[in-house]
Length: 466
Ligand code: MG
Image (cartoon, rainbow, N blue to C red; front, side, top):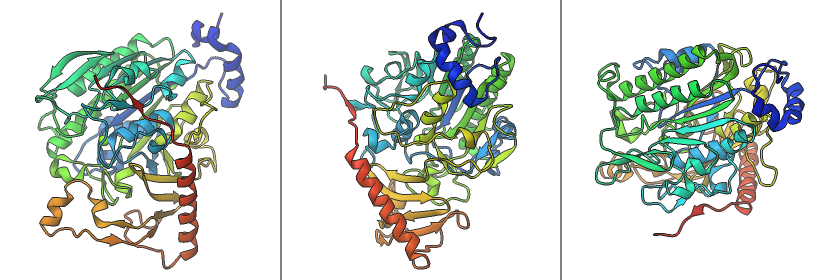
C-alpha cells in the first residue's frame, strides 16, 4: 500500500526519488507533494488589493489568503504580458528565451512566434512527477498550435490565448485545448467561466497532485464584468473587475477547503506586471511605487504577491526578501521531487526557505535585473537599485506622443540613477553622487550580466506563415 495521500501512480512513478526528496523537505510519511495553484492577474497594480493598501477596492478573499499566508512585498515580474509569462514558466529572464519582443510588440493575434517548444516549463517538470496540469486563461506565449499550453506541459487549456484587446472583427477566440470553441464578443462572463473551470479541475483531481495555472484575462483592458459584479466597488469598473477576481479567488479557496486540500496546497496570488496607467480610470494603481506597466520603475515590475500553504508557510507574515516569478521553476518542482533542467542556464533561485520563513533565509539569486524588452535598464541588489541612463519617454512608453504634444512631457535624456529602495520605495532621490562606489559596482555587475545573457540566448519558436 502506498502511504496515505500519495497516489499509486506517483509512487510507481518514482518512489525512490520521492523518498529521497522527503527528508530534505521534512515531509512526514503521510504528506503528499503539494498541489500548486498560481493565480496571475493581468495588469493589477501594487496598490490594488485591500491587503496592499487599496483604499477603494474591497478584496476580502485575497486579504484572507494574505492573513493565512505570507505577503511578499518585494516581489518582481516582467513589465509586460508575454515576457512575464515566459519568465514565470521558464525561470529565465524573458530575453534569454527570446520572449521579450517589447518594445515593438508582444505576441499578437497575427504572430507566427511563441515560446520555443524545447523550453522546459514549470508544467513539464511537475508533470514528470505525476501532476495533473491545466492552464486556464490568458496564455500569450504564442497561439499557433505548436505553441499552445497543451504543447508546453499542460494536460488541458481553457481560455483566450492572448490579450483581450487583440480583437479581429471585434472578437477574441475562446479555446478549449487546441480548438476554438467560440469567437467571443462579450467578455463579461469570462472571469466566471475561468472560475467554474478551475473549481471543476480541483474537484476532478482532488486525489492526485495538481498544478492549476490561472492567468486571468482581467483587469487588462477592455474591462468587462457580468451584471452581478457591475457597480459593486467604489472604484468604478476597474474596481468591479478586481472584486470579481477576488470573488473568483474565494471560490477556489472554498473548493480547496471542501476537498480537504488546504494543507496540501500552495496557493500563489500575484499579477503579471504593474498597472496600465495610461488607461486612466480603467487602469490600476501602483500605490506608493513610481510609474507602471511597460517601465522598469518599481511600479512596472513590482506586484503584490501572496503565498499560502497552511502549516508550512507562516501565516500573517510580511516578507521583504526580493523574490520573483523567476524563482518558481527552481522552487516548486523541487517540492514535488523534480529538478530544474541542468542542460541550460536558469536565472531563478530556489526560494523554499524564504517562503517557509526560515530565520535569515535569503534568495540564492542575489540580484534582480530589470529588462524592458531586450534592453537591460536596471539592477537591484539588497536595498540598492541602479538604473542606466534613459530618456524621459521611457517612463511613459505608451501614449507618450500625446503627452509630449500636450506639453506634459519632454523627451529628454535622463542620467543614470541609484535609489535606496529601503528608504525610498518611490524612487525619488538619485543617490549616484552620494554613493559613487556602489553606483560603479552595480553598473559593472549589470554590464557583466548582460554580456553573459547575450552569450546564452535561446531562440524563440517560429512557424512558417501559412
Ligand atoms: Mg499584463
